[in-house]
Length: 284
View 1 (tube, rainbow, N blue to C red):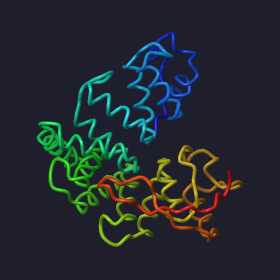
View 2: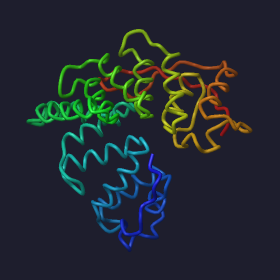
View 3: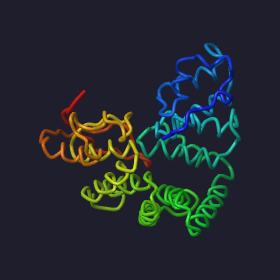
View 4: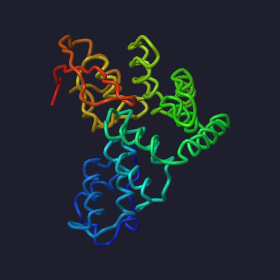
């Protein structure tokens, strides 16, 4: 999640006082404000048209793992509007949204696979690049190569290879890779779900500052979290708690026995539906 506020020189002078632009430019941006302001900057009706700033704002939303932000930025990279045309980067961003069960991201991935000439060759080149980076000790390279293996892009699909790459990247300290490995362990991608192991990796990512991991940990444990609050803010812990966010979630979960089963309306990377839970809120 972005921690550096945007500098004044990165924002057009006429937009310095626009409330949503200011909220997105803060050190802890509000993703909804980023996406809303970016849409207005692209339309040019409410705000002066500025595709480059729109791409910057969508990038900040996506960095906070907001699926609409990732989809919006992917579309700009796909079209070469406000950002360089880069189909490989667009695929990576659609993957981010799809793995958060945003149906539009999954649909765009499948559409690009079917209709974009030369994409497979580009993805194969990207896989080779990320493999070299991973072998050279770059944890982000391992994580991105794992994403390609997980979805079968740029090579054969292999959840086990993806799992090994996420583990390597997680062990090197990349919190988002810990969260991704938790998602693999929790789902049926590798066979029988291993929710205890998933919870352990969610806990690592949550304590390392990955807000989505705190939500995933809470859902595994059977409690409801707020995905918009990063774990280093006191609001993410139960009232009166000063312990690490993940410990607070896990302890609170053991006292909550009431859960119900349902089906999510959002689809996963390959069109699968994932189970979800609707537990009671511990606080508002």
